[in-house]
Image (cartoon, rainbow, N blue to C red; front, side, top):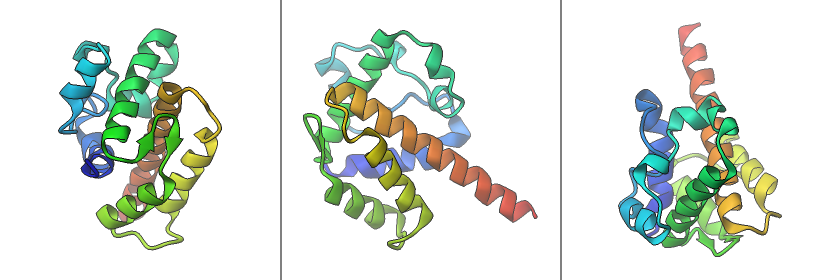
Length: 151
């Protein structure tokens, strides 16, 4: 269960090369969460939709479906309980899977995303917001690293 954050991070980092991947689809619980939330794979947004802000024109219903699937995945990983984040577990899993040091910019981005969405009370919206925020931050980080290596 605690592998989900690893899958999300891996999904974010790896799938930018395959931006057509569906949000959360690398998780072992993906199909279970689709079924539990009565959502089809066709309803799920892609990484590209998120990182290029194309989701902003989507219906609230579709965004909610995506958020509910993400909340299910986070809950199954033990990173969220209903509408509450398990912040310490998010930190420890992120550090363990990425080997970043405390104070690292990527860890700060995670904290920023947590803080931007922590006061939301609707669990699906909250899960969608943190996922979108973090995916955008990782996308930006990846492009900054690519630009540094080109110079």
